[in-house]
Structures are given as C-alpha cells and as structure tokens.
Image (cartoon, rainbow, N blue to C red; front, side, top):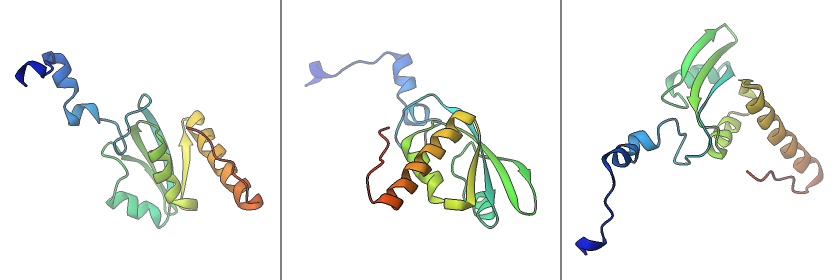
Length: 124
C-alpha cells in the first residue's frame, strides 16, 4: 500500500490545508474568486448580524438608527446567495453591482415562479 500513496510537494500541502483551501469560502463550495461584498441589514436583522456574522471577514462599515452596512470578502457562491436570501427583506446587497444584479435576477425569477407556478430556475 505504501507504493500507492501520492506525494505532494510542500507548496501543494500548504495550499491543501483546510484553513487555507477554504479561506474566503462560505460553507464548503470553493468556486469563483473572492470579492468584497457590501450589504445593508435593516433593524432588527442588523443587530443579529453583529452578534452572528455571516463570515469571519465581515466588518461593520456604517451604522444608523435604521440599518447597518457591512462588508465581507468572500466567494460569491450559490450557498452564499441562499444565506443572503434567507434574510429576506431585511437585507440588501449594495455592491459590487454585478453581484447585486445577480441577486436581483434570482429575486425576479423567484417572483415569476410564485406568480405563474412555473419554474424560472437559474442554473449556477
């Protein structure tokens, strides 16, 4: 059995450490390059997200009486989008514009499905 073992270079072993490989991931999907995502959470969801951040990179960038703006550096994966949508109308994406438009497309497809009973599923 020893002859069947694959030997990784020290560089590859360093990359394959879970804390390195999954850095900037939300969950276990490692897809796309990480981006800075700025989002606004409205009261009372902003208080919740201060106590339970979506990602380790999440920081608060602005706070008012009615909402808090956060930013995180993360891969924009399907499971991240699901988590953001879980917060419903208490959260909105501010930037980048391309990710904001992706989320709007998902919301429009969802609304169309609710209105017609048909599938408007988006392949990701």
